[in-house]
Length: 446
Image 1 (cartoon, one colour):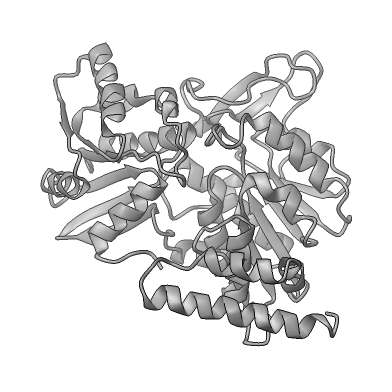
Image 2 (cartoon, rainbow, N blue to C red; image 1 turned 90 degrees about the vertical axis):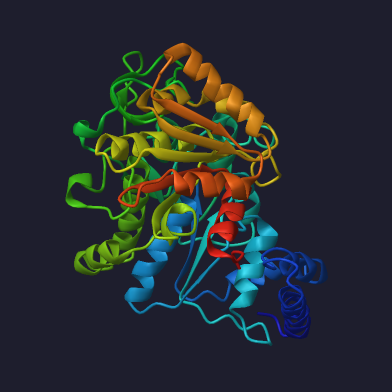
């Protein structure tokens, strides 16, 4: 770091820490973005100066779904191996949020003492971020449609990633999900070392390709891909009969790794964290131990005990995410361990203001299983229309649909409808998840 930068860096850090203290003291929020925004205005090169201080490497975790769970599992493994890790654990994944997280672990002079920085990164800022830092590892989880009012289709994001990553040093290792055709194609065309994770378990295939799929066409020639089977949305085993493009060879055997969290999507998160940890030369024994002891991040298959009832929160913020949480809930319903589900739909900035995506959700599969479905949220009546449309199609006499505008009342009703030996599943969008947790626990996420 240049000597001239040190006083300015110290002032930027002091300013950020003061803002953080004031915001938290006055209970104005989590202070996960504002301190970084103010400090960055004072010192525009702050992010690159902080990244330069990370001793062993920066790990960028990108993708539409699974960033928080994967990041937390990887952090748990690294810390168990003795590493000091800085991480934007609040989920603030734009530039100002990343700066805030890094500043939180500096001393008053701006000295960052960290072996690794695990940064969950919004998929749209990857090109900007790699100009500010040289990552040791880029971990790409998946690309699904998410908040189309902000980003557009997945092909646009994929192209941006390729243009941003290609010029990076060959010291960067890229780890990608081979089951996602667009990411598999990306990896096959990068000059860096690329490793692939994915599933090789046909027993986990879906019976059919879901309605909400994003990329079933060959990224090389545009022909329809031939799928041997689909695990989740467009993720699966595939090849192109027209040009020969096919799923990349895996660098990990999914059959050898268990998981502690429910759902196929969490199997992917586990494999992503495992392959990254292996790349960092962490022993398989330690990795397996930490997987078995792992606990979910807030809202991501998180389990709570509320008034003697078991509650599981499954964040559902886009068509693929909600379809997978419905799949998980239905599997548990089939075991007789759940009959009540609460869905909460908001349309605030963190959720995306366009809620038309709910019509790409296979709510028929939830209605088909029956039981009690309680719905709430800012867009409760949009969700009610979607559920009632499914009910008109199926006419399931065993469905009990309850509509409640007031979220606290909706939660109370759902809890009362849940027998003591069963689990209440709550499927909220992002801002709704924060509200649900505050009501259930009596405190905000800090």
